[in-house]
Length: 159
Length: 173
Image (cartoon, rainbow over all chains, first blue to last red; front, side):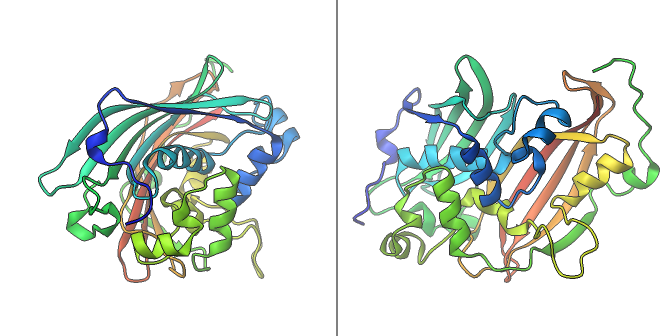
């Protein structure tokens, strides 16, 4: 396999993933909402967001937050990383003009009896000191250069 | 926000639907490349799995969609011929807002479990299940109730693609 890949043996509990900074704009919010086919007005209509929802501006929608977390994780694992599960909790919203920072730390790493290499990661998306969303993710990575988590099907894939 | 907001009782008809399959259906269009690229562009995701066919062929036996796009494939068009009102996704959630008398709502937690990869051309169907409704609660947004909804996704071969579990808070301000 010629694509770069992070192998399970190179990962240690407590490892920090490289942080990711991004300047959010109104385009970020609207593009993310429309890409996820989310037509609700609080993600594109300032007046609705402020005067109906009581928020300070339009804000990133949930499916797009998931896409940001996925990008963050697979930037680290490379394309052989296969997401198994994500749980995320929204504490606060992300608005245009926010500089959001995503950080992650490995909390567990195990190879199951059927030789699947799992890694658990705690991820935080924050704007300054304001934690907006937290995410607990479980991702499978290859245990050696011949392993490919994407080849698992049916009972051999147990996220 | 007020502590004096009164939250109506949960109607028996709503409680009777807990765990029942509701709104089984599809968005009516196959999984397609354009949305995949637009989604990757929206978060600047350069994963070659979604941009380089050779990588997709090598790793996944052909192009797939990013797993977190699962919900994209069940979201209905904003308008369709013959539709008399705007169509909305996650209909159980919007039903609850109306049935429980809680006009505002946010999604507070979301768990997604990913199973079989979603492939180009797949016809994804989804089905929704209300799992629970809480007692009245007061948060900084207002007074209302939390509820939990599962959305299960399957492809045209009835293979499970994933399950999304939404926790929402419906409230009055």
